[in-house]
Structure formats: C-alpha cells, structure tokens
Image (cartoon, rainbow, N blue to C red):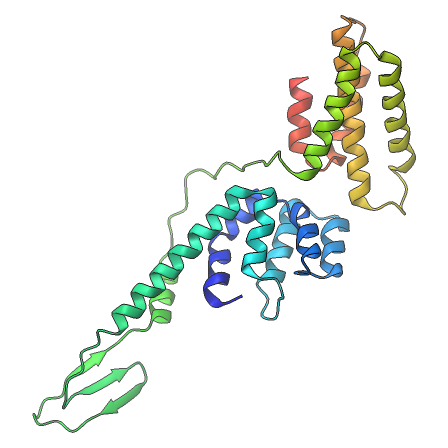
Length: 272
C-alpha cells in the first residue's frame, strides 16, 4: 500500500474497529493470498474479543512489507460490510483530492530573480541587484499535518452507536437453518423437527468441551444449538403449548456467550 492508502485506513480505523468483525473477512483475504495462514489461525482461534482481533488485523495490514493491497481489503469489506467499504473509498478520494490541492499550491511559489529562498532548513541563494533580500518560507505538507495533530480534537459528548452487521455468511446459514426448522413446525412434521433438534443438541453437547475442536467450530455449534432451541420454542407456540418453558429459556441464556455474535443472540432471546 502507498502512503495515501494507509492514511485512509488509519483515518477510518475507529469505524473499522467498532463495526467490523475480523473473522468475517480473514477467510476472504486468505483465499486471495493477501494474508498468511498464521494470521488466519490467530484471528479464528485466539480467545480475544472482536475488537482485539480487528486491531490485530489492522496492525498487520499497516505493516511496511504487508502483501495485502488496498483494493483487496476493499473487496473483502464489500462482501461483509459494504458500508465500511464505501466509507473507506470515500475517505481515500478525499485524501487524494487534498494532496492534489496541496501539490498545486506548491507550484505557485513565486520565482523572481535576485532572491534568497528558504525551504525549511535548506537555503539557496542568488545574486541580488538590490541590497534587500526576499525570504520566502514554504511550509511542507508534513509540517502542516504535524501542526494539526497537535491541536486536540474535542471529545464527543456521546459515543457513536456501534452498528451490528447481521448479514454475514454465518448469519445467512443460521437464517436458512431457522427457516428450515420452522417450516417443519408449520407443516406439522413435528417428529422430523424433533429429530433435527436432537441431532444438533447432541452434537453441541459432545463437542463443547472438546479441546481438539477449533474454537470457531464450537461457536458455530453454539449458534446451531441456540437456533434449535429457538425453533423448539416456536413450535410450542404454534401448538399453543402453555407448559413451563423456563428451563429452555435458561438454556438459551447460558449458550448466548458462546455464540459467534452474542449481541444478536441476546436480541433474539429478548424478542422470544
């Protein structure tokens, strides 16, 4: 990446950290050969928060010898978070336009004979016909940036609302599973539904404490287990079953922290 591309990512880093789940795009970046297997495994396996994984990905991308390109990063974002991709492209366009303006301003330095020019620390002199010399001090773009950085930006009164992207590939698979289970319920195929639910719950119970199982796979199983419980509750509602369901709600509540996105699972739980 060039300087302007890295500057665009740095400028949007706060939005990226708040709105992006690094696990959603690392597989895409890996398939495009923009990151290595080591980073892929770290982001998928390490017990870090979503924010920490996103910061790890940004640190890698902004390294000097990183093979991830700006266009490749934008393309990966477009798959999972088109809003962030558009924001980043817009910021990059603004930086390019700013640099063009600064370059055009630099071209208008007055060229007069018999003058003494000062450019920062370097000085070039010409013979002057007049006794007085003219000093023209030119401030570089880097100096202007460093001066603006010293100006403290006012702290906002309220934090920005964190956006949740419900349209990840994992969420799409869960939505399809939920639809399939609830369709069985509405079609009166209760036996087939309970068979599916039992298979999912058994698989979750078997592997949730298995240390040899990848963390990402365990989280996917937790998602499926949560979806199965939710579908079971839905079937009872269709049947007007008024029996006590507190144990099922407690089980859903216990599995929420182990799902891929506990925030969305919590909203589903509260709605149910």
